[in-house]
Image (cartoon, rainbow, N blue to C red):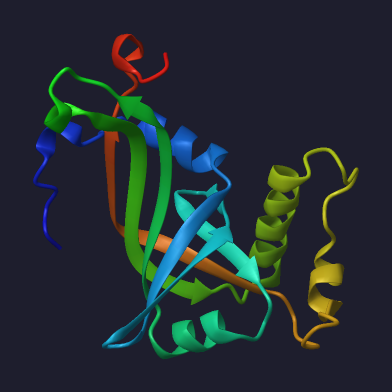
Length: 175
């Protein structure tokens, strides 16, 4: 993998990166359908035990592509606004982005799958369910759409990079 060339923008603050990945709700998973046909799709995710977990139907294009080639690039990004400068070419964007390279591996263990799905529920509908998701439910559930179990994938980072251009309130457009 090519190193980040704009070294001034590298974010090495592990706590900031962990907080960012934990709080954000949507990332883009990029896959290789074929050598000349990339495929990327935004997905909800959770960051848990230093891994990305995604879920979805047990069938569909994403599952077919990952079964053929589990190599992925997962990106989470937030743009905070435009940084102004009297020189037009020096206007910029305030942002934080994390790019993860790894393999998206199906989670087979029902206990891990249940814990991940429970974390997804707590992240996206916090406090709505009063009891944890039972593993028996996860074992037996089948989607009305495809009659398959929910698919859960784990992406363990082989490489994780983070870049940022922090907010400079004195130079933010409109600020």
